[in-house]
Image (cartoon, rainbow, N blue to C red; front, side):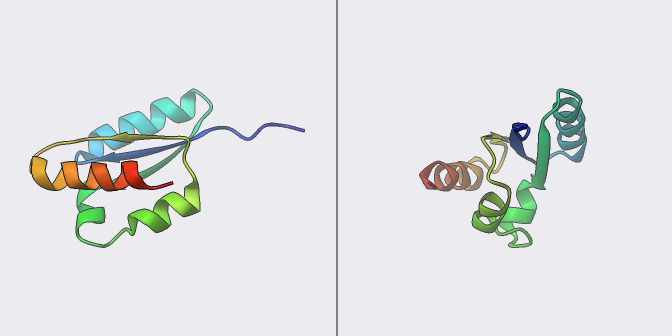
Length: 81
C-alpha cells in the first residue's frame, strides 16, 4: 500500500512567500495547504477547522508584525492536539 505524501501547512503574511513555499514543497512531493495570517485573524479561515481538515504533519508559520497578535496565534496553534 502506498504511503500518502506528507501534508505541510503554510501560513504567512506574504502571498509571494506562500506561493514559493507551496511550489517548493509540491516539487519535493509533499502536499501544501495554505492560508494567509490575516484570513485567520479576520475569521475568513477557521484555524481549528483548517488543521482538522488537512491534518498537517508540519506547519510553517510566519511570526511577523503585529507580533503580539501573531505570537498569540502561534501559541494557539501549539496548544492544539
